[in-house]
Length: 267
Image (cartoon, rainbow, N blue to C red; front, side, top):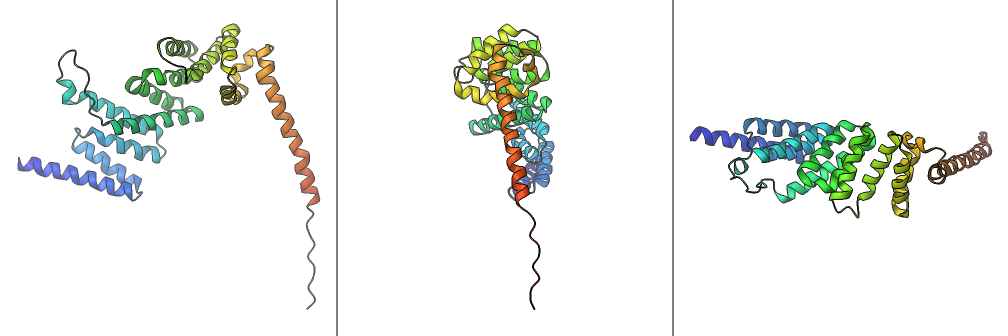
């Protein structure tokens, strides 16, 4: 029993050293202590939250997501869940405040990874959100990841599941976008345009997605359609003309600003 108490104290000391380093902003040192804490006592799986935050702050997005996945796996392996009787609901060992923080971290990192093209990390984050947090709320994000990854059929499948099984009034736009892109990838113009017309009918939603429509090459498949001419080609022309109109003004400013000659002083 005495040896166990010493071990417990050592684990507690390691964790406190990690917290101290974390508060001081020494993230690499904090990460080492948190990882040592977990190695010393694998039962302290909630330390993974601090490991994740350190890794995210150190620009290791994938490592941070993996730490969060480890935390959810720890919850599933927890004795309170392993020993529960058949039919009993899973016990949420992770605190509600921690669960909310995990969701916020995953959602933020997933979208950043998607926008920067880190599709492996984006998929890990989206899959974790779907499996562990809220399937309906994050299916559209996973559908977008699959579309950007080139799996058009999977993107359509996930988007349709979100639209049919879930209450998606507020967030269905993302699944529509993913499905429309997927249909373009499959060279199916009719369903793509039908979905995009629904998407662009809302002015606020249209403003959010119009840049993606112009820059994503998948939508070049719609060239020649009325939709392309209205929402993509016209916007590209306006963007090009505005850029061109800026250039003469810039050059005029440059020509009028002649260098002044130095005037010798009378000493």
